[in-house]
Length: 294
View: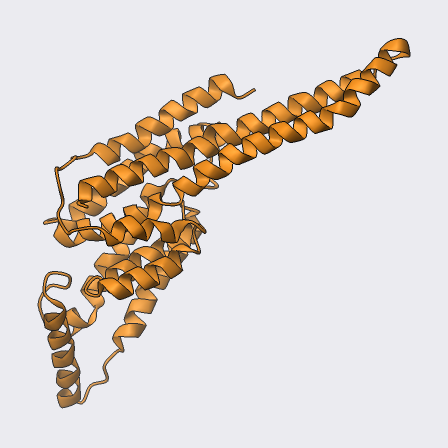
C-alpha cells in the first residue's frame, strides 16, 4: 500500500469523524429536545385533552429512547471509523518530514492552513464562526513538525557533530551518537543524555498543544514524536505507536493495520489535496449544520 492509498483511507475516516460530531450528534440531541418539549406541552393541557396527552406523554420516553439509540448507533459507528484518521496522518506527517527538501516551508504551510481552517472548523463542530476553546488539527500537526525539527537539531546526531538526522541509516545514526559520546569523554565534558533531550523537546510540544487546546492535543504530539523517534525500527514504531494512540482514541491502534502495509512508496501525488480538502469539507459540514440542526 502506497502513501496515496493511506491518504485516501485517512481522508475517508476523517470525514466520518467530523460528520458524527458536526451533524449526527447535534441532530440527535435536537430531536430528543423536540420530543421532550412536545411531551411537556401535552402534559400541561387540561380536561379531556390532559387525559389524552398524559397517555401519549407516557409513550414518549420509549420512542425518544429508540430514537436516541438510533442516533447513538450511527454516531458510534462513524466515530469508530474516524479513529483511523489521526494515526495515519501522524505517520504520513513523519514520512513527509523525512522526505521534504524544505522543512521550514513545510512548517509554514501547516501554520497557514491552520489559520485558514479555523473558522470552518468552528462552524462545523461548534456552530459558531469563532470558538477559542478548541483548535483544528493543523495546529497539532504544525507543533508536531516543530517538535521533530527540535529533535533533529538537538538529537544525538547533531550533538555529536554528525550528519543530518533522519537522512541516514540506523547504523549511521548509532555511529554518530557513539562518536559524540567518545568526543565528550575525551574532552572531559559532560554529555546530555539523548533521552533527556528527546523527553524535554517532546514535553514542550505536548505542553504547547495542551495550552492551545488543539485537536488531539498532547497525545497527538506524543504520537508524532514516537513515530519519528522509532522511524528506523518499524516493529517498535508500530508497538509504541499503538500504545500511544490509545490515549487519543480507543480505535486508534486499528490504524496501524494499513500503516503496517505501507510499502514506502509515495504513490501518485495529490499536492495540496489534503490541505484544501480539510477546510472545504468542514465548511460544507458547517453550512449543512446551519440548515439542518434545529
